Length: 305
Image (cartoon, rainbow, N blue to C red; front, side, top):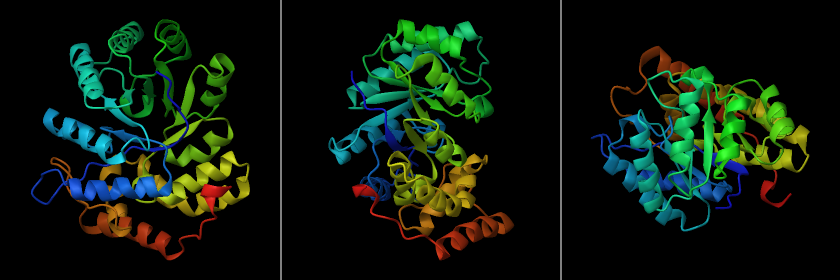
């Protein structure tokens, strides 16, 4: 399946009610804000989506309702972060049945697999589905690095492995990937605080976090870089950086949800064992957000560059 691995793809939050049910009304408010800003895809079930806390039924409902809501305007990807190959294959099959256009895949969870085990895991799942796949390479948070040699083996065996969410936090890796694989492996930068640099170096797109609260600013940076209006992108990026740094903290879910409350496109409820922000920490994070909002930049007409 041909997939256009370009643009901004929010790793969206899952919205909950105060009684810990899915809040589909607020979820769709956020998705609409993403579409209005001009995002190029939606990623469900990632870390920001609190995927590990969702039931299978909730995950399927999110996929089905998101697919129906976006109505073909942008592709919808489902993340796979499973402990067993069998469970990952099952999720790939249900994602396809529920209308997902592609998959994002983490290496096996919990067990620190060897390189051979990781490659075999990815191959086995990829060969079980026709959906295009983006490998999530995040050794900082998940302690497993997918090396270039491992990618070579995967790309040789699996034509539907087509992209990497590049979150090694080493921007040199973008050049290494482009030098080795050319256009065979699309690069979606996955670290908000390295996004502009990564796009300038040749990343094809951005799987973003703070986009969940600030969709227009995120898409504007991407579009300005691609239009070679780098200085304008840098100006927005410098304003954005204190907010973007909320994405690289263990409490990124709470921080980004709090930001989305301030921009009117989300609520702060999280699923236990996470707790909403309290006390000094809440005050400190809200000050970062309100300070940024007080000097929020006027954006250029980034949809018509």
